[in-house]
Length: 322
Image (cartoon, rainbow, N blue to C red; front, side):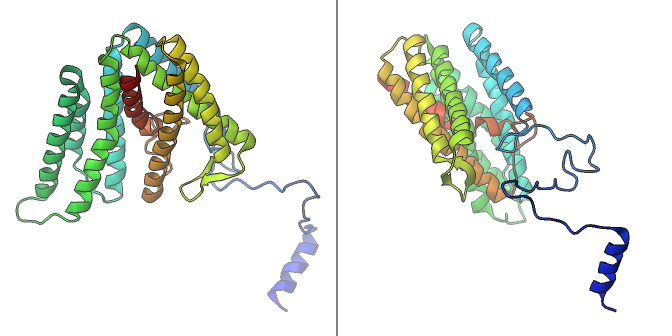
């Protein structure tokens, strides 16, 4: 007797019914993966509410709102404290990226990268752009030499060119771009309002992109890098950021509203590109998030990816046009 006959007889004996296809117009539910929250036998038994981006939506909203209120209060009442808060975030983000790189066998020299990155960020306070530039060059040089001899004098380093290039890239990606927020804050009397303006516009871009993407997203922008990012979401980011730019530049900075339009469009472009850059890096590293510090968001770096290039563009636009 064949195996198929035995299985059929056992099914008939136990009264097992053959699975029927779902009724027309009703999609068949996808079973939760084994071990996933809410799966059968998984601890807790209930799955947290998640957005289409795969995030825990309540946690993401709570964390995002808390961080937003904290930044607003600090910038309005104790703006110099913002430098310390941002410097701490830059240090943690640099550590997160360095940790992930080393897990992928990219041996970036963490100590000089993190310490030198703090120098790049903080020296913009007393010395302006010259301090930032000098600290960046010095840190890059120290990282090259550190990587050259981190295995001792008798052993030639492996993948020296790759590791040092990625180290300098990380130094430019996080501390250097973040330093423009310090320059923006300190160069003019209304610097705190300028920083608040660009942060509001980045949030407008994120919210507009999320809402439009969820409601209307049909055409992927760069599916090979970020499958969930759509052209409809990009248009939503533009609409929200332009409106936000008109209001913030007019009401907070008391400047020509057209500057708000230019700033809004510019920040949507660079914030989107910044998000795509981090998405590609995480794709190459085979990870979902850079860290786990912020529930619903991932790590600190996962919140700074669009803020960092936006700080530079905001400094450039506002310093030129205002």
